Image (cartoon, rainbow, N blue to C red; front, side):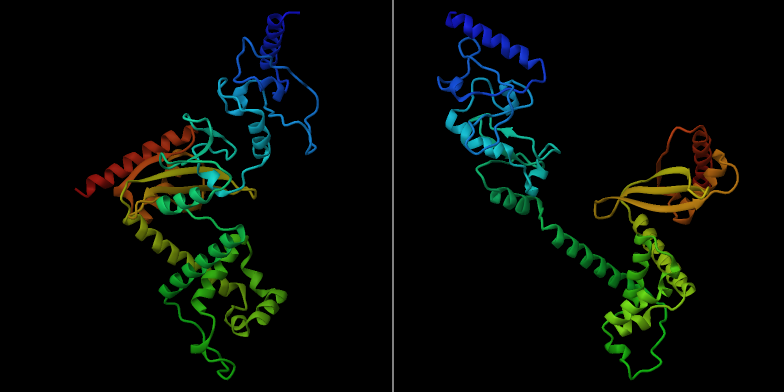
Amino acid sequence: MSSQGSSSSSTDALSEASSSDIRAEIHPASLASGPYDASTTAFPLDTSPVPTSPGSPAYIRGARSSPDDFGLDKAELLTTDQQEALAPKLARPRTCYVYNHMPDVDPETKYRSKINGQLEWRCKYCPKRYALNGGTRCMKSHLQACHDIYHDSPRAEKVKKRQRSIEEAIAYGAESTTKRRRLENTTVIDDNDAPICPQTLEVLYINMLAACNLPTSFVEQEDFRTLIQYLSPYGAYLLPDSHSKVHGWLMNQFEAGKKRAKEILLSSTSMIHLSTDLWTSPNRMAVVGVVAHFVSKDGDLLEMVLAMKKVKGEHTGVNIANYILETVEDYRITSNLGYLQMDNASNNDTMIREISHRTLLVFISTL
């Protein structure tokens, strides 16, 4: 068989494999003569298992049989030595956080320079690019210096998050004016020298109940109180000894959080848009939720849960509108109300008309 016929047969085989899911290999021998040319270069197929031993021939494998699978132009295939050097790197997963800040959401996406065809890292936030040469120091420096993006280990991130929660609890506790009980036996520990701030303890404990979905009676569990007693006798004394007192803490924190939410909403630099939905809880309770979306005075796009109200009566548009407007008026955002987003239930059409009519009447009354 002539070389022309052999080349034609190989090219036909390549085209047939490209239209199927058969995995293909580029044999180093077929690339030894230089750049790929479909008219002169054989491109043999092999459906044998992928070599796994370190001494196996260095093949570049792709999901299809086209050189495009490897991010290469047909005129820019790698040499045999380059394949052997690059193949292990292609198989290695990308675990560094810098790859999460490229344009594509998949960190395994590979970009190549249009100048020399080399792999490169591209910034998601600006046109900056860096050649991938085995290290990520330049990319990390760029993200930190230009975009203020840092990364710690998962453990360090959790520690930072906990520290932020403590700092917020200290700040919120300092705003509280609730009177605290004093120790009956002042010889145990002086209140002024106590290592635990009562206001901060209240905020952190209520946050824990909410995050873990714990009942207010959890404070009455003896094993829990024993643990707190071991960690800090003063802390065990400060904790309420009944669920009714914890309920008082809960309402205090709710009112304090609501006050802060009102201040943030009133200082927003945009209209306040609402999304709302009505659903039935597992215990057959109808609940309507209201979430606000707006831009804060610092320029941040924020979402804030304003209410989760139990719906009494029929689920008509007028009835639901009453709960939405009650929330709007409670947070004093009627004059700054923007768009409303909800699903396409028929009663929502009636709800929108009712809200539009009543807010228009409020606006007219203020003129």
